[in-house]
Amino acid sequence: MDYIRLLFAFILPPVSVYMQFGIGKHFWINVVLTVLGFVPGMLHAIYIMASRPPGLAKLPAD
Image (cartoon, rainbow, N blue to C red; front, side, top):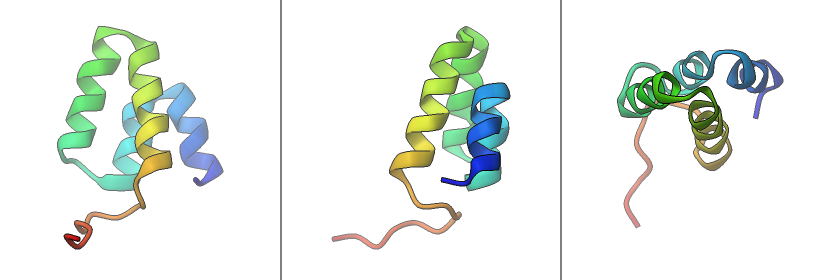
């Protein structure tokens, strides 16, 4: 995880998800969670950043 994105995850969670994945389903899920409550949006941003590699390409199927 990049420190700048981690900082944004605590300040503005959707921005950190946007920086890593662009506007896609993870971004919109994070926007909804942030609107419903700041903590769920922050936790989702940290989880997404830690569990998935950055980039817009899909991972190959196993």
